[in-house]
Image (cartoon, rainbow, N blue to C red; front, side, top):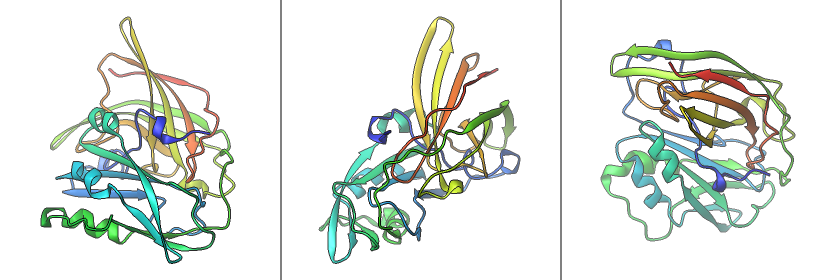
Length: 262
């Protein structure tokens, strides 16, 4: 079973992960996306919470969430925080974090996110504090240790377009045949298994994307304002795709596709 603490790169985000690139005319100031989404129901008791942040002081989130807990059923459940430092560095103006409960959550309970006791955030973090304090979901009755079905993978190839504040550069991907026993198919995350070959040098890494930017579509790269990765011009990227459920279980990877970043 795939667990994101071992992943080098995670998640996607604003404008690579939120809207078609043709519509990218301006950048919003800040964005915080959390998966499973706020208000989700029948969430697995061994859930992983993925956060992706864009905007001013996004790197302060790790300190804000240190010692965070889930409150539900009259109890405070400690959370393990994983700040994806390498992912954040190699992405394009994004920060990525993961929260995982140290013990399984109780069945059929409503949980909300809370900071460690004594945490006092400065006024400059008010946007992030407000978003995090509103986050809640309800568990189902089961743990989830089953993998999603293996998806198919297609590509429309390399995409490059000059926009107002900078170019959008990505490899656009499509995927299908989605199925999971507990996570809704349209809410499955994505794990890209990537091989980057530049001249004689080859490196391999993984990129976990919390949500697709459109139904059954995702990207490796970035839009005008932000994104999950910065492609190297002239490099050949060989990609396979797995879907990931709310408990962090990853499907077997798809067949590979190969695209050159021109």
